[in-house]
Image 1 (cartoon, rainbow, N blue to C red):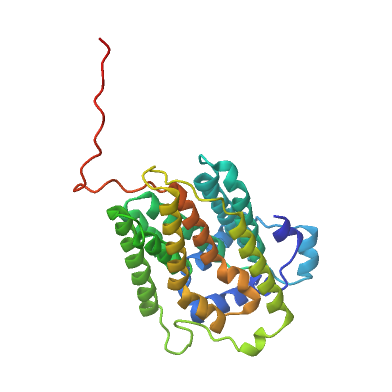
Image 2 (tube, rainbow, N blue to C red; image 1 turned 180 degrees about the horizontal axis):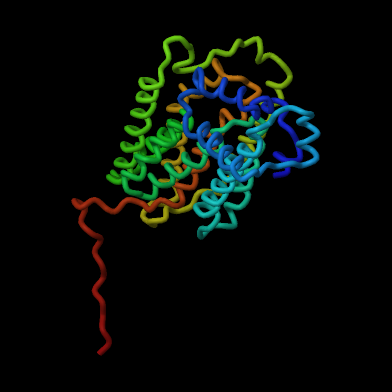
Length: 334
């Protein structure tokens, strides 16, 4: 609330105007990010019907007579999504057996997400919520239809949902024994995400416009002090998050020791970053470097969730072909 109502994003405030908003987000690469765009427009219609609008001294001063029809809708959609993300991460990570060790990394993640909002979009916050829910659901063994729906909604919100699919696949790939439900969840997410990605580009494709797969940004626009500031924010944020993560412990199923959990986490983390390379390369080649923090946020969130999964996901049961460990006879007192 302090960042949104007390200050104005000079970088994004022109998009609070309805005409500018529609001109940008219904064309180019943005036309495929349906959920966040329509959520803002629908919310604005509801607010307008009830004559609800935010007016604070800082906002009115920054507005300086400009038309900001969508400002309140942006605040509601992104604010509710941020609160949902905070509640979900708190419920999953902080409220656990090792809750004291997760308070600091949890707060670091929230600070990074909030800081990334200096670039105001209609879809970032929503995409983080769905991505986190999908990864948590896959590792926790949620039913595959639920994961399929999350994949459809997440990809229709922002294509970066595919990074979440990469995180689940990386986790399943290196698990010490086959976990059928984890692979079912990974398959549901992959099919839902890829299918939605392709379907949106078939249905909404406009041959008259460029930007079907990525939006070209002249690199000359990226060589400025703003890009340096964003790079420093990203580097410091990633380093603090990595350092704040708690030390690994035995798996929740108590059948894997610390060494096995550490091996899984290391291999899964490397695989996540390798599978995310296409997204990261496109972000560098076709993205605006001033937005580096928000561009890297999906990968940072997935790294955080992989570390959580190392502690929280139950270890696989022994294989049926492996004989159970023998137990000493129970002596009954005479």
